[in-house]
Image (cartoon, rainbow, N blue to C red; front, side):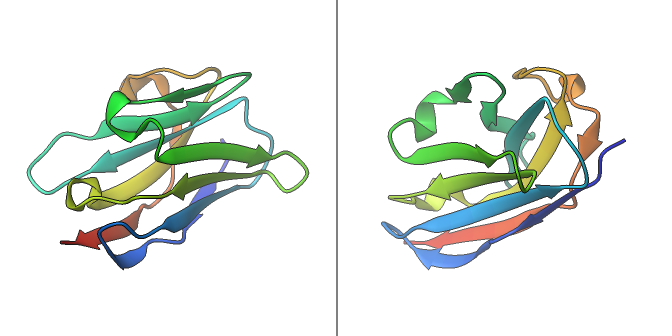
Length: 116
């Protein structure tokens, strides 16, 4: 199984930006970003395989991209809102899926906190 390591989280004011990175130990067919807020279920945010996918709440604000040479997937997050707060995880799969169950390797997560 591929190993995944997230980085780039932090504290930012509303309207600010962060860029998350997901470094993989090897090739990945698809990488998804998920987030989990306290007391809530983990939800899919974005995914990249041969296409890119976004949950409606982040469309126009977040951009997912991949550096195949470095095996790194990025999530550029702009115009951040307090409701974007949570632990962000990246995960790998054979193809993008909105279901947590569709992913077989997960990173440890990185905290994103957006203050009002």
